[in-house]
Each structure stands twice: as structure tokens, then as C-alpha cells.
Image (cartoon, rainbow, N blue to C red; front, side, top):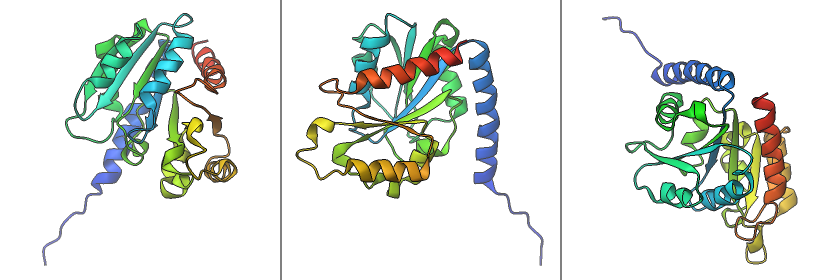
Length: 222
């Protein structure tokens, strides 16, 4: 019987990406550029939340935005209307960004000229959580219509997120959403996660989120 070698491709891919992510993170720290990896499922309100955030922080920081999607430039156009510099990243069918793809985007947007850059990742609660992008911090949005059981179904996403935004709280009268249950489920997975209840539509809770973000940016860029 001939011998053959088994190669663990998935493990190798993750290990290589992790090394690239650490190198990229160190480079961002050296250049004093804070990179936020913002994740969520489609329709959770990422772009609207981002527009509310930019409106509050645009006079304090030089901000750039990288919009990642499988196709289209709808989000980049929407962000450009705020006055922030935005570029669109097409993933060529991939449902996530890795460190190498993120670095390509940073090179194209000229990352060293910004204090704060947002990577709006591909809408997906699975793949983006598996790949370290090299970001300074990870944040995710869970919208009320999605349900309070999502931490049970997609634990990795909640485990790696430094901050969780519970968006569309203005719709709670319509949906059966348990605030206490979702907080308990998130904290069980990630005790250090910061949790903010917000409405990107009305602006409720956005100030508290921005205060947290300011603290992270200022600490990173010391």
C-alpha cells in the first residue's frame, strides 16, 4: 500500500492568516491608525449605524471607511454622502475578508493618513468571525428583528466581538425580544463584551456607543 500525506488545509489557512493579522495590527499601531471591524448579518443596520457614528465623530478624527461586499457599490455611495472618504471592496464571491484582503484595502485608502478607519465587513454571521482581519477592535450589530437567540446559534461571532450593538430597539413593540436573555447569552460567551442598545433610526443609544469608541481610538493612538 502506498503512503500518502494528509495536509490540514483549513488549519494552515487560519495559521497563516493569524500571522498576517498580527503583523498588520502592529503596523496599524505604529502608524496610530485605529481599525474597527464592523460585522453583522444583512439588513441589521450596519450602514445606517455607521452614518450616525460618522456624524458624531467626523469633526474629531480623520475617518475612512472600507465597504466590503460580494458585489455592488451601494454602501460606499451612501457613506460618501456623509463626507467621509469611502472605498468599495469586492470580495469576488467570498463571504468574508481576511488579513491580506484588508491590507489591500488599507493600502488603497492610504491608511496612514487616517486616525480611524471602519471596515464594514460582508453581511454574514459565520465566515467573518472565522478570519482575523488585523483590526484593532471587533464590533458587531444584532438587530431586534433577528431575535435574542442568535448568540446561541452563532456563538463565535459574539465570542470575538469586543462590542455588541443591539440595533432597532424602536421595533421592540413588534417583536418578541428579551433584553435580559440576550445580555445573559452574550455575557456567558464573552464576559468582557460591551453591550449597547441602540436605534440607528432615532439615534437612541448612539452617543454611549460613540463614547466607548472614542475611548478605544484614543487609547490605541496614544
